[in-house]
Structures are given as C-alpha cells and as structure tokens.
Length: 323
Image 1 (spheres, rainbow, N blue to C red):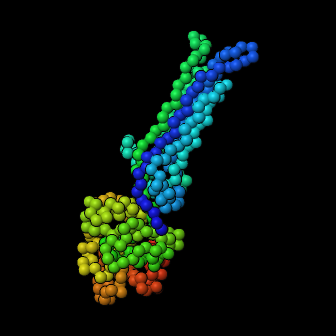
Image 2 (image 1 turned 120 degrees about the vertical axis):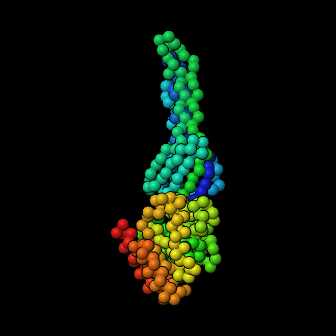
Image 3 (image 1 turned 90 degrees about the vertical axis):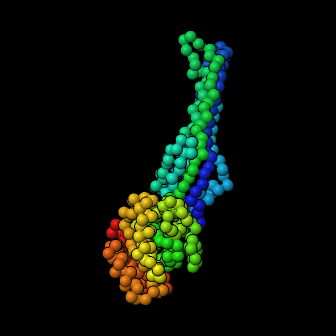
C-alpha cells in the first residue's frame, strides 16, 4: 500500500464578498432609499477524516488549497452568496500544524471534521449604514480576507499491531506471511524505508522502518519510525533467533521507546522470536526462557513454517480481542 506521510501545503479560506451601494427604484420615487446588500462570507477550510491511507498522494502536486470566496452583495438588499466550505480529506491519524500560529489539529475518526481556517466576513452594503441622521448613505465596505497559512500535514498511523525491532529482524517477511501485504524484503538493513500495512482478519498490522540505537534522538530513521507507533494498540517486539546479543537487543529497543514517549513503553507487548529456523533448539529455548521473565506473552515463529504462522496469527487475534 503506497502512501506518503508528510506534506506541507499553503491553504487559504475564502475572502468575504464586498458590500455594494444600490438604491430602491420605485416608480413613484426614484432612488427612494438604500438597498445595497451585504457580501457573502468566504468559505471555511476543514480537515475531514477518511479511511484511505493513500489520500495525501492526491495533493503532491497541489501546493495551494483555496476555499471559495463569498459573492458580492446584490441590489434590493440581497446578500451575496456565501462561499462553499472546503473539506480537505486526510487519512485517519493525521496531525496538522498551522506553521504561522503553531496550532495543532488531529483527525482520529472517519468522517470527523475539524475547522482549521476561517473564511473572511462579507462587507456591508449601504443599507447597513442607514439611520435617522443618514437616510441616503453612499458607503459600503469590502469583505475581509480569509485566514491563510502553511499547513504541515503528518500522518501517524493508527494500527492494531506495530512490528518493532532492529533492521533485518524479519518484520517485513512476517507481515507478508500474516497478511496479504507486499512489503519489500531483503537481507540487509533498512529494507523498509516507509511503513507498510497489512490486514489480518480485520486488524491492521504495520511494519515500519527498523530501529537503531539512538533512534529517539533521530539517528537512522529515528523519528520517522517512532511517530508511526505512537497510536499502535499492541507492540509486537521482534527479536531474531540469530541475534548475537538478544538481551541487549531487547533492552536497547525498549529504552528507545521509553525515551521517545513514555506511553510507548507502557503499551501491551508481545515478544516474538523470529527466524527460529536459523538457530538451534537450545538457543531458542534459552531465549524463550529469558523473555518470559520480561514479557507476559512470548511467541516463536518462522515464516518458512506455515503451521507456526497460523498459530501466531490466531494467538495475536485472541490477544487483541481480550484487550
């Protein structure tokens, strides 16, 4: 599933329409009174959540987003048309920041709508200025500009399972085996340069770029990885059976999660020993015994063993259903 997770666009709410100077033209009394209508309000800009992770791709070549302007006032005291609001569709999990004000907006539900830029007010027509001391006002006002700003858009995935681990821990192969995803697989570090998703019986699993020590300080792919697991419900911590120091690997990853966000450290965790076809039974037993002291749920898997993959799939679904 291809998508982009960062984008900056210039957005403008609509300008308010101008008020006008106009007069009633009655047969018996030409210019009998002011009748210039007010301008319509400019359209607002909203973010709207959609269940489409690829949605930001639609805007890659659209640097500016503009809502409709309000219409000019009309004669016979008629108001101009209000500009249509613009609903900018973004994937669920989007965080948008107004670069100018620092204000932050979040979309976490499908169909959720959040106002981010207010349209300008329509100007007053000359009828607005009529009074006992000014029965023939010749003044009107222009509509005001709508708000505009550079908006930084960042997608932070909302997944049920987030696969974490050092590069080359077998996460991509595992995702492909557990779901119908087609994450790139290779026997070298940083094969996964952006998140990949798969559907496992209706639960979303995310394979995100591998961590390295110092990721919380943005080394390697650091923050690009960590931001995508902030909203993950369950951490699936992958440690390969061929690890040279599995105890250190576990501690380092856990520490990076904790440094970046204390809540990540507290999420429900499944410890998964991957690539068990690359190690002896004694090594796998040693790892499992050690990790059962660290984590309540420990599983083993090899993507070469269909029965183990099926057992893991069933176990993960049962685990999240209990949560």
